[in-house]
Length: 263
Image (cartoon, rainbow, N blue to C red; front, side):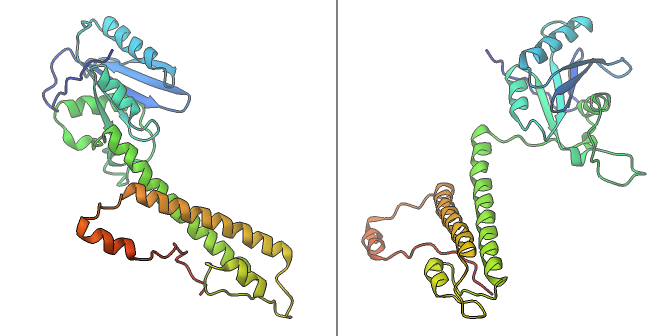
């Protein structure tokens, strides 16, 4: 059972609030708890991603720090390793959580460089309390996307990955042929061109090289089909009006081609 989180604007945090900071790593999470400045933080280490253990430590911290079970909880962690699932989990249990951009965290001005390494849990706690008191410059809070928006991003990232893999395959094919002094104008009909290509001495393309190029060409074709499928999913075609449907159906659509040519 989940509970809706009660959001508190910075500078409007009620007294008796439990502040929680997460220092995340792959195997363990360090949790820091306090109710305000001047109090020695309570620190606990738990196995990473043990959700019930996190809730249990929060409940124990309330008891140790003499807070009622209903005391509000405000937490934070640095964006990165755990994405946003932890944020949604905490919010779902009534905890006001902030995911902070580690590259925008305030650092010592004498250093004059962006923060790049992880902050320890005590530093995060201190900055969380300052942020809760209204100091907005201490860090930048990440805008957490909805589950649907985050899922849609995977389609765009998959599409970019496929395009990069397709370009790499094309470059590899052209490089293999170029190493033998061979050049093709297009990869659309590469198998037929391989049969006709001749080396410097008039001999045909060696069978090993032909197999290698043919394999890469097959991979490139698969990537082309995958890119076409992803593009259709990312940007579905606009339904055609009755007036244009007949015209569109009469057009012949050329098969997709690799955009890179031998130079």
